[in-house]
Image (cartoon, rainbow, N blue to C red; front, side, top):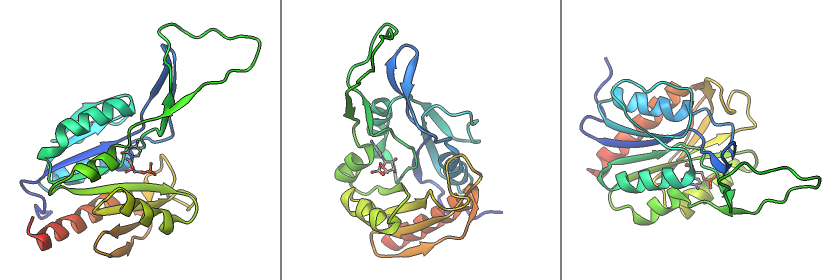
Length: 222
Ligand code: C5P
């Protein structure tokens, strides 16, 4: 039996890609399947937490005991996270949120022309950064998918977004890309810990991260 390390804790998890609409038939998205975030939600529930999962479009079924809220765009994910974040103890942002969206969306299907198409894109809100700025006692964990200088960029994001911890994912590494069943991550915390986890299933990565968070909260007496 697993110890109920997160009993009574409220955990918010985001997962999956976002879809940024162009017109009624087209959108921009990315390769995220949501597996990592769903594994976190599942394991947190098994550890006794009250879990809210804010999910972009995925093919995955909702883990047992998890309250799931479906969203499409980065803007919708932002609104749902901001609505729920205050009452949380732990926030884990594993979603692959689009950084840009079309500046204009069209109510009718865009017609092709003979020439090329230029589309202006604008930044989406950085949900994690906003939480980092507004958090009070919440323990906030981000994910960073990097392909070069992974530690450098990971550390930078940890500081810049005022996180408590970051899970750095080297997407160049064997077994750590999008869509797979495994992941190989480095876990960094704001108090200077660094843990290099071996290649393992996403479920095990999730469990080990949650165990670290539970330990840290106990140390902080939060
Ligand atoms: O800066 P970067 O996008 O690499 O940071 C990744 C982390 O930030 C992830 O935890 C992701 O969920 C979060 N993020 C976000 N809102 C965005 C972009 C990223 O919450 N618009």
